[in-house]
Image (cartoon, rainbow, N blue to C red; front, side):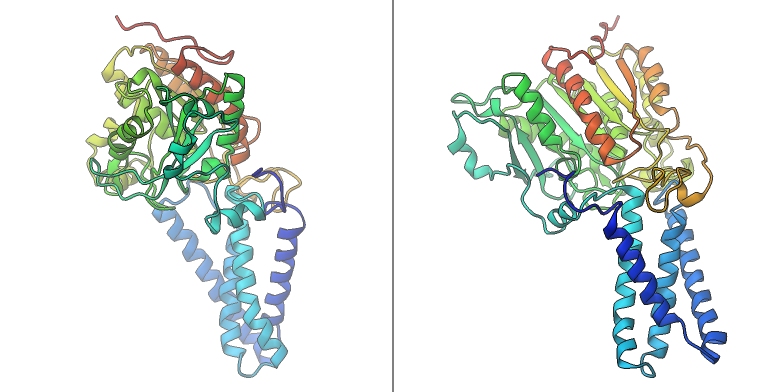
Length: 467
């Protein structure tokens, strides 16, 4: 399945057609004459504007996004409320044709609003990808765990994706189905080799399958395996949130013990079930957006478990708003945990590390955060796309985000002081799943090279031993 093919949900004829139809339907329902035009229409529009303002304020209060949403999102939501009120008030007195339009207008307006959200965060690029995800269609090369014995000691040209239900005995973290990618080399021979393993973490708003459906991770892994005699790390597509919109930032707290799940549930299960290597020198973490923040945090907090990371578009530290909001939302008001999960503080307290390395892909200059938390000043559409003039935030001005702006270089500089080898690469594709997909090829090569002892050209040099 190539997620880049199909009918675009971000640009082109489909979004424009929906926007046009929604606008016409709203106009049919809202417009009238006489007393309605003088009194009814202004009241409906005022109530719609009030509802949009309230939604904007609530999103800011809940810390759901670090940037203002595109103005068109609130336009469509306001029109939805205004049209709904007008349709209810005028339904009985309307003509049959008008009643039909009234019943169609509100769903069309809601779809238009959802399309703007999708454009804002770049989540589903095509109708086909969206349909496959929403209908929980099978993933590329998906195989049940029960079929694996029959594939033992065979030659596979591509890896297999296995859905798994990992016990949460250690963490108590309620999670969704997770997935394990087994490279071709895993199937060769009578018993599986002790391959390295990498946990793959998506953005704040995510499903465990996003790296596969949206980020083409298994395709990238297959390409890597083809270049290395069928060998590649086992990839574990983990559930860091437990639900689509639960922003845990991969910490233990009121939103669930996500960190414990990733370290105490997932890792032992993959070792015992799929024969992955058990030592930290063969385990890594790669993450996108919020997942990038998680990748750094898990590695520096648990160097006894992970020795390599790939941070694509992550932040300076776990966050769910400003510092006070983060302490409240992620740590239940316990300020000491802020330091316990702040990479710079953790590294300074730990001192020199041994054999730890990583790679950053910096997307701070392109603050759109698909599948993750949109950042302030972002929501940016490239010039020429609908709703975009290259200015970002639906036309609002740019405001640097203290959590993401320069985070990669700041963290890498701090890492060099504690003997963690790191490199920083810039992304020229914006903070989108497309950029995550393109970045994954060098990131996986770097992380896999460190874990297997065969560095790729882009891999950082091995970290010096601690004194």
